[in-house]
Length: 278
Image 1 (tube, rainbow, N blue to C red):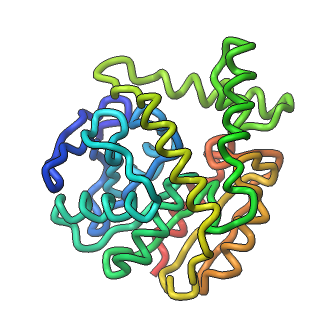
Image 2 (cartoon, rainbow, N blue to C red; image 1 turned 30 degrees about the vertical axis):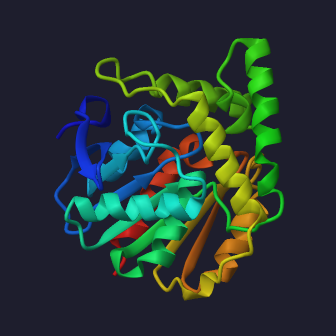
């Protein structure tokens, strides 16, 4: 079976826009659609997580509108990002999917479930919170400080955003960033500065919006986070799990926003067990 680092990038036309995506994994009736975080492109997915889930499921990851190698402009709202994701899923001819949303992607996954519930079987929401949660509107400040620290230390801002600045966290950050470099050929186009700013504006808009009624999401949901998340406090994950009628909460110790990557050896089996439930 192909691995994430070897999977070719494909294109599909969605309402006149070419969407870039990669698809691989074991044959399964319901594929898992991966929805990515702020500033991320296809090459920013942790290979250990995708390879682990692809061992048992068909996995599809894509660049949403205006991101990476996908055309168009980044939508102004997370709602529209969800609409675009629905368009992509339907363009592939899929009638039922599982969703894996990380960070911003978790917000997009919620929009998909609210706008097209018939498409969604199960969801994994990692490092994310509900719309209207306190503090999410301050994301630009948090990201800006991390980028400044990264510039001063000639390092990747995810060192500061995704992992705690402990010995264990620094080691996890180094391992994660090393894994992202495993793919050396046919890498994705990097996100533009314009797209980054547009994503931040959409996140701020979501943070200032009225909360959604999550009680209408009846699908099973696995909510996962680290216990020291700088970007989306784990209390928001706890609140979201409480408001979802069929949720399972997993908080991973001594980890931050990238807790599912730091603890991939535990998280992947947790995710597989959740996806396998009937």
